[in-house]
Length: 314
Image (cartoon, rainbow, N blue to C red; front, side, top):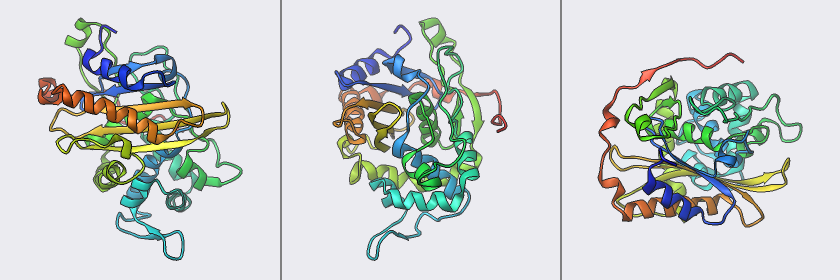
């Protein structure tokens, strides 16, 4: 693709290899799509998000004050989790508890606010949006929604926009995909909406997202100390397509030169969030070895244009 960052694209293609899936890499400070590998999957109407929905659950629960970051929730006589350990280990019972405390209406409100159920891009006519649950699942209820993502359909682009908002501290950008050098030269970031209510929640989530890589479900994305990676895995079965799903939504922390890398895999039983984290880890390591993060794009200092501030009514 003429508009892709070729260094990133080569790293993403090599890391994905022959696995059936898609990789989307975004600049979280501008919303520019730097590469999109396997557009057929990235632009489809979505897949069950598995445990990546716990990003929505966390932000909703923290914003609504139904839990504090250091609150312990017991899921057994001697087993307990707080937000950091639950995110790192992707504990389903913890997030089901938060979902039941929130209730269906608040969960879907935050999902929409965070960009689910609507197109993530400004300029891709072929993009199909995912969908938000219309009612709680018959079996498992809201807790199944907020731990496994049951009832939701999410695209790699939607997850990339959501993770970008977490990475940049609370701004949901329209994703844009310039196709030529001229479009790159004229690129202007466009804000979909600021997420002011989520700022404190984002800071509270970061230790858990880092913990996923350090000691949790995303250990395959283990990185060099100079290039810390934060992320959330997702593993489950999409019963509509009978496919196993593996997700990893991630971002790195290198001064102002940051990336969001979303990996979505679909296939047989060997597919998982851990495998997806391994793909992302290979991308980060390849770029680090090429000193990609040593240079800072001066366009990060641009002030974005705000296009709209509120989500459409539901």
